[in-house]
Image 1 (tube, one colour):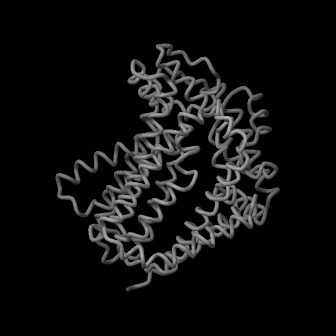
Image 2 (cartoon, helix red, strand yellow):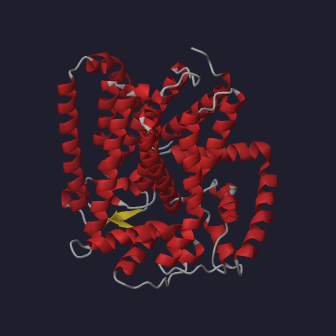
Image 3 (cartoon, helix red, strand yellow):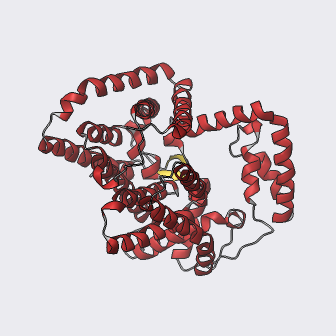
Length: 433
């Protein structure tokens, strides 16, 4: 099979990023326990891989079914007995969506004037709350929505993994990850925000891409419309998904150089770009439907995020000092001028080596998963007494199990990258099924 050397750079780059993620999760709390558990998971996976592959489909289905039913029971118990309070962005979104569902279409907080990117997710949440308000309370409607999106994501992940690999051990491993780690019981279940809906939308898009070559012409037309709408909604929910456009263009360029840019990839990827582009204009439609009026005197420009990303003191994360300074400026134009000067000054101060170091720190923060139970979680609104007595123990178990599991996945992907040989010349997506 022909080696695609031009892609080696991206293989090494992804390997480096995943290695940073591994060290990041080990370097923090309970590094030794996390390392030992990750090694144990790796050994279990290695020694039981052959045995699992010999299991019958019926046995595998029983294991997965029982596991997922157990997971759902635990999820329902978490929602019932461990409801959490939320803060910052998810709270702003929920509060405003609840207000809209009550018939009050006034945007009285300056938050959305400063961050209008969260208006679409607020409007979509309002549609759900408005649809369910005669049946459920706001909290119950929100829990149902998170429950449905999370479990749809899990089921679709398992479906795609099986269709693309036909490996029983992979499906059992993924099922174990979803059932035995905090992934299914903490942030993505308890806090509704843009991350999980976008994960599901991207997964649906990839599902269509993988099947594209197996569709006839009429099915491809219908699929094109679906991909277009999914990409548009994904942009509305989280505008930074626009990074897919340069990623697709880079892929096109590499394939064009090798004269292997084919219609089966070109058409659906073009549709993704068009859908994301429509999202830019569809945002104004959401503003009108939700009665939201932009206020440039409050709005933060995109450059403010770049400037914060270069703040060495805050390791490139959200910088309250930067926000405080920008709030004092009169309008978006002044903030943009200020940001450009600040960006130039920070890049000059950091230098090349400092910039690389900061990017590595940001990558380490991004791939560190140990505090998943604290993401936008302001603490439990109420919890059983026995749980409160052992809360610290459960928190430690959460950190160790999730970090170790993610390290195992990172390591497995690295191993797969070096075993995998890419051949796009004779690619047949439908052969994966």
